[in-house]
Image (tube, rainbow, N blue to C red; front, side, top):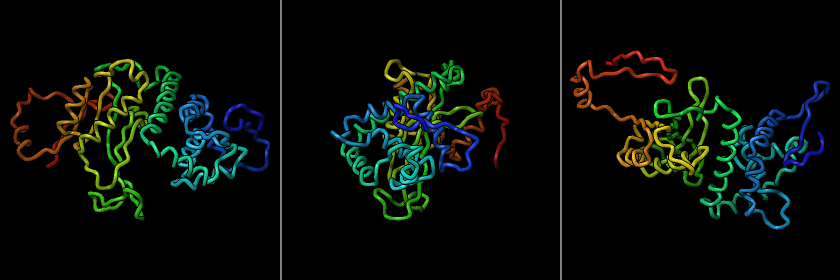
Amino acid sequence: MSNHTGIYPLLAVEATGTSIVSHAGAVLLLRTADKIGLTSRLSESLARWRKPLAVHDPGKTVLDLAVAVALGGDCLADIAVLREQPAVFGPVASDPTVSRTITELARNPATALRAIDRATAAARSAVWSLAGTAAPDHDVDATSPLVIDLDATLVTAHSEKQHAAPTYKKGFGFHPLLAFIDHGPAGGGEPVAGMLRPGNAGANTAADHITVINAALAGLPGAGRYRVGKKVLIRMDGAGGTKKTLEHCARRGLSYSAGFTLTEAHAAMVDRLPQAAWTPAYNPDGRAVVPHRVV
C-alpha cells in the first residue's frame, strides 16, 4: 500500500506474497468508482449532511454500504466486513455512525435521494463516454432506441419489518418497481431507477410506473438538456399497460411497448385478421421470431 490522496487506499498487487487479503476483489469496484468519479461526486453531493468536525464522509459511508451489499451483505451491520480490512477500505464508520448517517439522510429522503441520483447520473455519463461505440446510447434513434425495461419483483421478509406486507402471491415482504437499461443480448441490465414499495402495492399502479419512468429518464446522460423522444423505448409487461401510463409515455414523446392480457374476445378478433395484416416480430439481435400458437 502506498500513500494516496483519494478516499480509499491505493493498493498494489504482487504475486510473491504468501498470504491473502479477504475481499481484495472489491478493489475492482473501488477503482472503478474512483475512475468514473462516483466517489468524489457522492462526497460532494452529500457534503451538506456532514457535521462540522465529523471524521467520516457521508458519501464514503454510502459507497461503503453499496460495496458491502456487493459482497453479500443485506443489512447496515454487514459493513463490518469492510471495517475488518482497513488496508483495503480505509477508515470505515462504526455501526452507530452508519446508523446516524442513514437517520440524517432519512429526515429528508427526497432531497437525499436526488443528491445520490445526481452523483450516479454523472458517473453513468462518464462510463458511457469512456465506452464510446459500446455505450448503450451510441447511435440510438427511433428505429434503434435505447430500451428501458420496467418490472416489479417480490422480496421476501422473514419478520415484521417496516412496510412489509402480504403480497399477491401469498407471500410476505416488499414489492419494489425497478427500471433497467437493456444492454442487448450480449449484456445484462443496468439499473437506472427504482421505487421501494410495500408487499401489497398494486402491480399496475400507474402513478408508480410514471414516477419510475421519470426517474429513469432523469438518470440518462444528458437528461434535462434535450427531449429523448422516441430514441428511448419504455418496455413493460401487462402491469404497465394502463391508460394513464401509456398516455404519459405519449405526452413525453417516448416509444413504448406494453403487454396486456389476451382475453377470449381479443383472441377471436385476432383470428379474424387477414394474413396480409401481419408483419414479422424481431428479437433484440434482429432475428425474426418464428410464429407459433399455444393451444
